[in-house]
Length: 330
Image 1: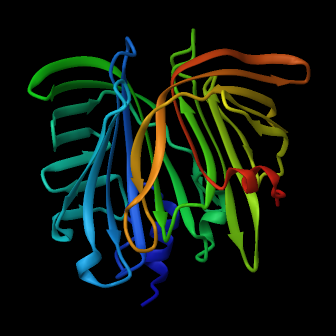
Image 2 (image 1 turned 120 degrees about the horizontal axis):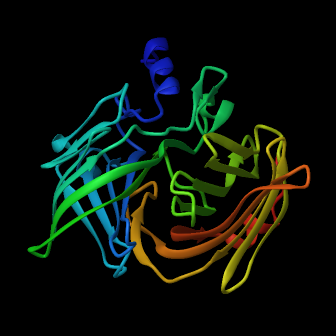
């Protein structure tokens, strides 16, 4: 049953769980990334839930892990009863694994230990007129896939055991999430918060095929958080893509808008395979690398506001990329 209160809670809390009333054809997952200061440890841990089309036999909770240094990945399932999550805050439990704004406790496969978040989270701003990274699209119930950005950048400390070997480090983290019926049929996604000479900077960029009524369009979002503020280029704030092209080695992307012009050249590197939702199971495979390198330049009115190299960068290029590159924006 539709509830205005639940709807508004979901709109205003993209970091929270949105699936309380869902019984089938639904997924939700949180992307919990942390990288050591020396860039030798790179991890992405994704807790979540999947509700299939065929009833409870196809439901599962899961935690998947990507070791961004080695490319090794693994996917561990749990009974659906071992999943819990809050609707109005970032707080998730899957089996013995726990995640929140304070950090995480991990006991999944060969990875065990604790991650502490040592600074405030830096979310994409949420307002009623523009609730988070999706803007007003986040209020449209028919969207195939929703997206939330929980924190651009925060300090972490980690005490881990990997295959029984202890590892302790300090570093930085990033948290985002997705929920809905299915991943886009084609998309590009980039992230790094390791810009040389600027430890506070963080960049996220994505373009995807968005089903819309009886058609579709290419939607895009770019957020470059630096110098104490968010600089945003999106479909919904009337920014424009100047160029988006890709070859075997790089993604080249430039956008312009009220925030100025942003140019990205992102190296394509090999990575590990993650599970992603199809309507029937979590068996779609997506390659993600955490070894990309971005060259970025942000300028406005002829002045370069930020420029440099971003390392330990994550990238996913998935699905019908030919159509993604050829389709018109909205």
